[in-house]
Length: 321
Image 1 (cartoon, one colour):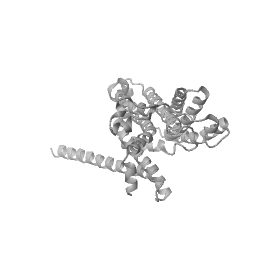
Image 2 (cartoon, helix red, strand yellow; image 1 turned 60 degrees about the vertical axis):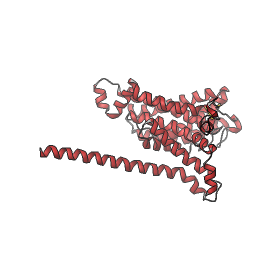
Image 3 (tube, rainbow, N blue to C red; image 1 turned 90 degrees about the vertical axis):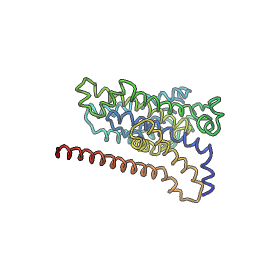
Image 4 (cartoon, rainbow, N blue to C red; image 1 turned 45 degrees about the vertical axis):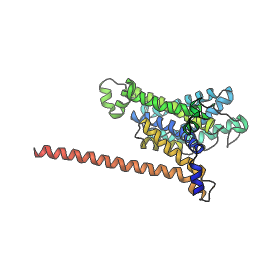
């Protein structure tokens, strides 16, 4: 136990939490934007998987990691718009659309991988290793502890992820578009009655979701790893949905929830070499996810009960008067 504590109370462990949380943060922010617009997109897992493969493929074909990221973002937008097209145009249940994208992402990525490389495992043999630039921020990296954790040898997309937290907050609460997104999510009929294009806003939210999911996928295959590997997303899309729910769809709350799940995954990685059962260690991030959702559900239930109790008291007072 003391060995585990000594391992996790280090700057390297804290830095690994940041690296692990980034794709979850991107995807959770993506889910937050669509949730604010009243769109439930559970297709994050499949979108991230295909985007991760396309990122490496575009980088391999072009010789540029930037092109890889842009290719992943473009595919993310395409898949998100596909969900919207079938859900809004053909009135397909949007949950089924998300399940379809997840199935397409898992199976389609393996098929595409085989067609491109002849392998059903990973891209490294044919496409080589690809790694986005890592950045050490001058001066800030010299700050004790914090500098080593946040500003030393982190992927450029790590900084983009934290910038996106601020940008999404500004979008949702400081721009006319954000007001429309939240209005559509709260009551689309009322928003439509005052001239807001409801479907237009929902499509815009899906485009933003696709861009963020594309960056999440690109990070997985060109920062977290340097290749695409079958099953590499490993439930992070669903964990991102849990982070979005725990953070109540608020950018800062989502970031803190993602940090919690990043800690759980980092802890699991660090204790793999101990005498604990391997299956138990691997299940740790998902156990934390279940506990987090349970706590969120209980707190939401209690909050709703209190609101109802206050409303009933007001009605009783009015009746008595």
